[in-house]
Image (cartoon, rainbow, N blue to C red):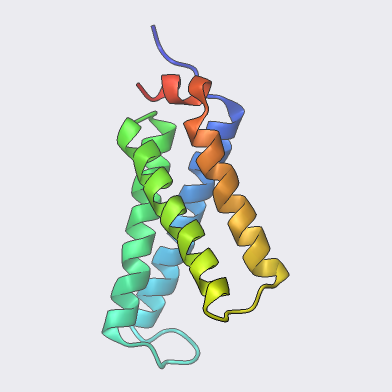
Length: 122
């Protein structure tokens, strides 16, 4: 029996694919010197491209209901939440953008650990 993806899974899969595409275009423009500021380094471009490939892989994995994609989202988002909180402790601004990032990533952790969503990925 084929598992049916929920609307939330489709939205989050497409979200990761779109994010990956944007990061891919940005990283490529920095790498090839097409970015308007032209101050990018190869190392910076490689980091952006790594994030792009992560997002593209996770987007495909989520849409095909692969458990490894759910686990990668959990690990990456948990690390992001921890780093944002550490940032606040060491003096980074406690502003609306950081609070929205924290809320978004925390919600994705909650969503992908819900029992009915976990069942879809098994």
